[in-house]
Image (cartoon, rainbow, N blue to C red; front, side, top):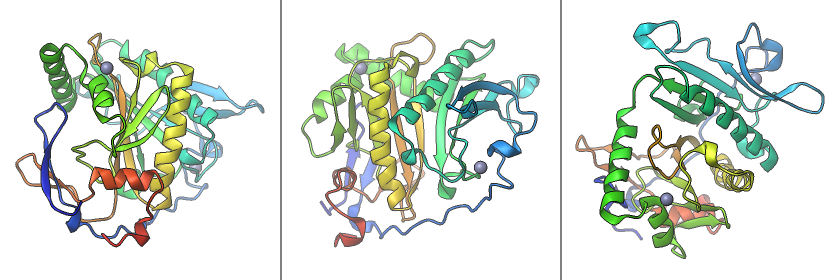
Length: 314
Ligand SMILES: [Zn+2]
Ligand SMILES: [Zn+2]
């Protein structure tokens, strides 16, 4: 597919111009070289951290840990910027990426997310909790020690509110859930990257992000707290596959875990937004994005059917 065309999201009034012929070859993005001597997340540099969660290894040392972010914009003692932000340090070893971990280790990271999510969403004055990860310089991370962040916010972020509204509108009109319908609609199609009995992984039809990926549990599940252990294992397998491929090409990324707002209905999922070093993501000032990587092509790359360097279309 080389001709540009406009696509509309599955159920939202969001448009993207898929413009594959505008893409340039991505090249490896330089990583940030932070040493273990100065890294805030290396165990030997921990000083007076407020630890909120700790999962130890067989030696009795922490392996996955959550700490209150000392440099946070939001704190519980500031009424003008109330909230809490925590950093989940995903390993005690410096320089690893999430795709280097075992599936079991990724499950432990998700258990840490769930523990903090459940605590923070019940804090007084908190309207929403977001869980996300930035990996690599281009995506805004400032430290090369694998970590995620959790923000407990005193407001509902506008994008989350819009997503919830669009979700509810679709549910009213169709009775069914849009994400359950996406799984049905996309099953067997060329945009499917991987699936098993628990998880559906696809390059979404109107992806706003080059190489964008959605991980959707097959069971209608409201929040990360409702995921079963086998579902978390499937997420671990899929993240290793998808993030491993991005790592191979030196593409940095964000992922965001989208959960239900309060007690409302929703179908939780994980959105991976890569940040390749190509001309991409041009927002036209109209809310329309240009994505130079066709999702069908991205799916082939994740499935290992094509190597970026070898593809003549680039
Ligand atoms: Zn470190
Ligand atoms: Zn659903």
